Structures are given as C-alpha cells and as structure tokens.
Length: 298
Image (cartoon, rainbow, N blue to C red):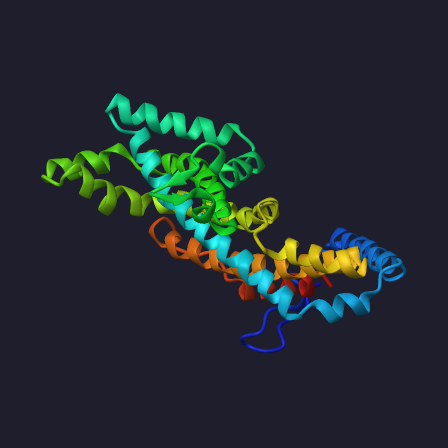
C-alpha cells in the first residue's frame, strides 16, 4: 500500500531520496594526529633551554633588518644576473653554430660541476691571479658584494640555462616554422613568439630557484658580505645566544620566502591563462574550499 501524495505538486514520501553525506572519518583522524604532533613539537621547543625573550628582542633590531635587506639585495641582484646569463646560454646552446653551442655547454658544465662555495672563494681571491684590473687593484674591485654577486649570479646562470632551454624546447616547432613562413627573423621569433610561450614552463622552476637563492646567499658569509647569517653570527659571538639568533634568521628567511612564494604563485597563474580555461584558485579560494570540504565531512 502506497501513501497518496498530500498535494498536486508533492512527491510521495516513499519516493523522496534522502541524501546522506559521505563520512570522511580518515580526514578527522589525520587532522587530530597532525595537531597532536604539532602540539608535541611546540611543547618540546617551549620547554627547551632557549631564551625566547632574546629571540623576540632581536627580531626587529636594526642590524638584523639590515642583514635581511642585504640578503634580499644580493639575492635579487644575483638572480637577475643568473636570468640574463641563463637566457643567453640557453639560446647559444640551441644555436646551430658549433662554437657558441660548445661555449654554452662548457659554461654550464663548469659552473654546475663545481660547488658554489668554492666559486665564491675563487672570486674573493681573484687578486692572486689578476693583481690588477683596468689599472686598479683587484682587491678594490672585488668587494665582498661583488664577489658574492659574481659567485652566486654566474653559478645561477648555469642552472637557469637548462631551465630556459627546457622551456624553449617545450614550444611546438610549428610555431617557429609559421613565424619563419611569415618572414619574421629568427631573433624576433625567439623573443616575440617562442620565449613568451615558454614562460609557462620556465616560471615555476625559476621561482623555485629564486627561493633557493635566498637561502644559498647565506654562503656569502665566506666573503665577509654582511648578509643575515653574518649579522646573526656577529651578535651571538658576543652574547652566546646561538639558537636564539638562529631563530631570528629563520624568521626573516621565512618572511622573504613567503612573500616571493606568493608572487611566484600569481605569476604562474598569469601565464596559465594561455593553456587553461579555468585559472587555478587563489590561496583564499583554496582556504574557503578546504573549510567547506571539512564542513561537508561532518
């Protein structure tokens, strides 16, 4: 026996489908486990023999802010040099001229094959090979900033060359052939057609390289460049608060990394317009989606 409809537009009660949300118990278990681990980690650090008040006192001290500024300066300058050298080396490597191709290959091989720390020390001691340059003492030209700039930038150029080469080769050859058929020169084809399309492949690893450069710049302490770690070392050598000052450096590295990671994300999102109809969600949209997902799991 069926229950008759109670109204002309109403569905019989036995035909109404009651949707039951899928239970994601695993998500709750994983969330609780992660929170418990984080709490244990925080408790361990809170109970350690670390004077957190010193860390707080030095977070915004002028010397630490200056060290962070120097770290940012040498990272941006070296990355710019690396980008220029990387693009040039990649174009040379793909050239049909065997001389330029071989020179580019040799540059990449040499600087990727030797430690960046050694390269920095070689630039710092360049006066042993060239006592004077342009009529001036080499020691006056190769300042701590210049040694760090050349060491980090030229080393980065070798890595960027491979990234740019991979990006260029990811562009369909038909694009180049079509440009040549229209009478566009090889140079214009490269700069106006191929490279803009290759950016979609080049940007993500380049952003990763820049984040890596922020941290690698700490090696500049060997040439006495006053970056963040050097400044921290100067302070903890006098007050012996080693861990406290190292946490200060971590704070500033995280701040810089976060800022540039956000910039990288939006740059990738910009270049994704040419390959996808739906752009990736912004961080805020991701957070909202995750919150709604947890809400549905109830």
